[in-house]
Amino acid sequence: MKTKIAMIQMDIAFGDPSANRNAAEAKIKEAADQGSTLILLPELWTTGYDLTRLGEIAEDLEGPTHQLLKKLARDNRVTIAGSIAERDKESFYNTMVAYNEHGERVLNYRKVHLFRLMDEEKYLESGDTQGNFHLHNIPLAGAICYDIRFPEWMRTEMLDGARGLLVVAEWPKPRVDHWRSLLISRAIENQCFVMACNRSGSDPNNTFGGHSLIIDPWGTIVAEGGLGEEIVYGDVDFSEVEAIRKQIPIFQDRRPDLYQ
Ligand SMILES: O=C(O)CCC(=O)C(=O)O
Image (cartoon, rainbow, N blue to C red; front, side, top):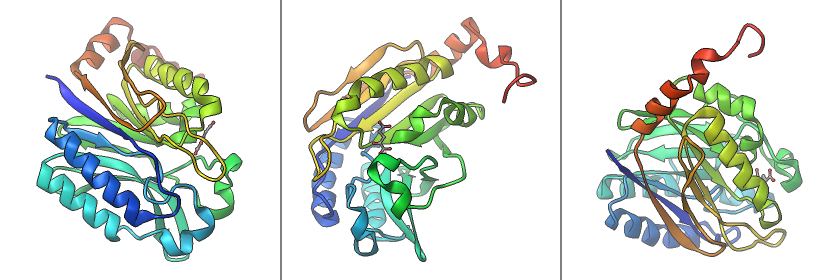
């Protein structure tokens, strides 16, 4: 059975959650009208990297963005995922959430690897738990941007049987070749679908690379965006994962007695 995935490769208004919510709402409705089951938004899609203003613009997990996602997921019978600047008491996190078609939050993953090149470690705390959840009965794992440079972490998440890796990002344009190569590698080595949503446009410090990707467990590109704003669609059949894992049984052949 095919599952339609939509990745909302949007530009992000710097530090303006209300403008970004309005833009995303229209795009989520459009993707849902196209029959999508899973809709991905980029990393920090309500605020961008306006980290010095997190005190004003980050929200707790019951904040207005979460209320909107809950409602849009329920009303349109879709699962929606993306990362949002989270405030938890005095601390801030880059947190990927997913809301299922009942409006339930099924994922709450705090970015584990903070990216120094964008000063994340100065303003954010890192997470320390995995981001596994189910889309209907399909086990998936979440990751945020820089996390994909850590194959050991991605493998840790995949050891629970995940068949797909969802990635949300604000990946800069000068390193878009790394983005593509790293994502293709994560798909091949974990024999899983990779569904990766990047932003487009620029902020005061960076221009971002777009090129949202859906990659199958053989490493073949199913769908790829360009540089600008668009919704990238692809149909995936998660049963392909099982067939490939039978053909080349890397999860069986691993040697955890020699490495983790
Ligand atoms: O690793 C990279 O080159 C980009 C990472 C990044 O932009 C991020 O984690 O926000």
